[in-house]
Image 1 (cartoon, helix red, strand yellow):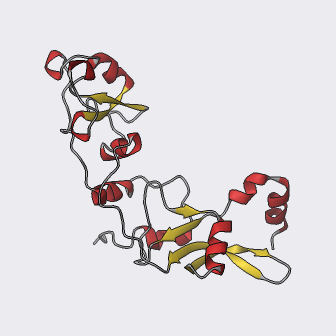
Image 2 (image 1 turned 90 degrees about the vertical axis):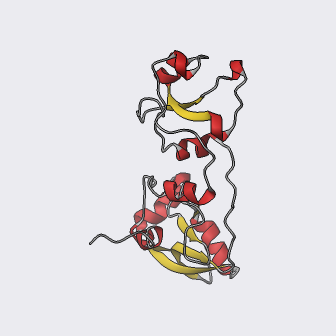
Length: 194
């Protein structure tokens, strides 16, 4: 084992969070794309030991106990299929994901907040069909006015997304770190370029 790897575990507790394992459903698709379904290496080793997952790919590093040496899993597959959710929770994150982290008024992609198309002060509800992602300046410019009272225009009408639609949108926003062993499993059903 690489000595720098072993000393990072001892000297730096953050080292324990290194080497996450990509978790795939029994159909070899990630449980989620955004956030990407990841387990700590400890959880992946435990699940493998309990025979709940199969190890598909491994890191070069190993962990040892007095009687066992195991390479750290980088990709694991659940042995039992987990049925994906059919409905989508109305959360800030899912709202931003639906709108692809883009202001629905100006198209900017900076820091996002959300805006009620029909303001709450005028009876607007906090529902999928009335809330959009907005940048701070657009949200401030609109305030509690109706759209017709401003120069702002919606890029897309807000609507309730399907769960599969959010999963597919999530694939457009990969996390900052993708291990090489994950790539075949993240985009295996993507259309190939000619």
